[in-house]
Length: 343
Ligand code: 3PG
Ligand code: MG
Image (cartoon, rainbow, N blue to C red; front, side, top):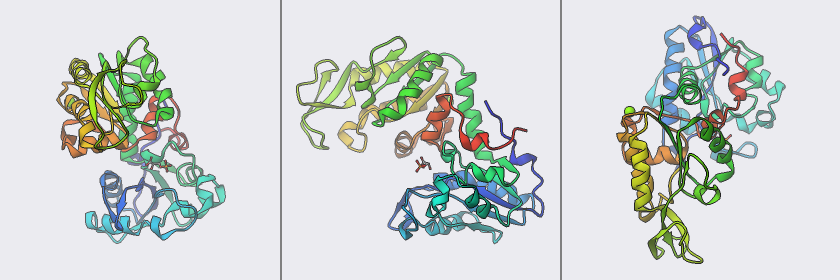
């Protein structure tokens, strides 16, 4: 693995820092609906301020706007940041994706971003799998360093790849199956068991180490209030759909998790936004929280489940990365990390 040099090694006194953060946070009615990623960036910002940086300019993308679009402005995020940290040396630039050069990883746009800064710090783990101007090209323009969050994420997820304590149990779920086949392959090599639930379970063939649901909560339609019943996984009635793992599977998954020394979980076990199909995801969340193991949870939906059940204090590491954490666990190099020189 590539070990980028740390911002802790940088001499920042009197310097102007450009910091790439991942402020791609959900907005509701023009306000920040979840500030986890904003709070996660605070230690690096504070480190730079405490080190005497003259200026700290924060840049991030937000959503996937097509050109400049006020609905994707970072202004509400900046306003929220100011409630958490007040320092006139800190500024938040506008959404990097307002420029077409961002996703094109354009060197010209990277130079524009870098103008007026002496060093670059990447603390945007959630975007480190993107080779974009603000995550990749700019690291070749300014002296580049890894922020504290990026470092901690690499340490936590890297440990799962390189030195997990066994038994290592991984739990994979969710609907974006194409994104997860690669990580399943990687985890089958490294883990002692991979428990698969959610839509993913329908796409995966039985094989060694892979534990598939034995029962599901089947529904007559893909609807929150559809008629439903518990069915054996191989006996879902014609035309019905599995919307959650069943009670036998929940118990079996919980037993595997309880016996683990290391657990990684990504993706819900069913349609947990609908209370009648949330129990499988909740059962996994509780089992992970109770495990006497080193536990890591990544991915927006599983993190939201942990959050709703107020279990975050009982998880050792809740990753701010979805796609980035999966690509890392697949064994891929992340362009935003590779662009930073090693120590
Ligand atoms: C995320 O939330 O997954 C990251 O911020 C990356 O966003 P993107 O998928 O739009 O590149
Ligand atoms: Mg623990």
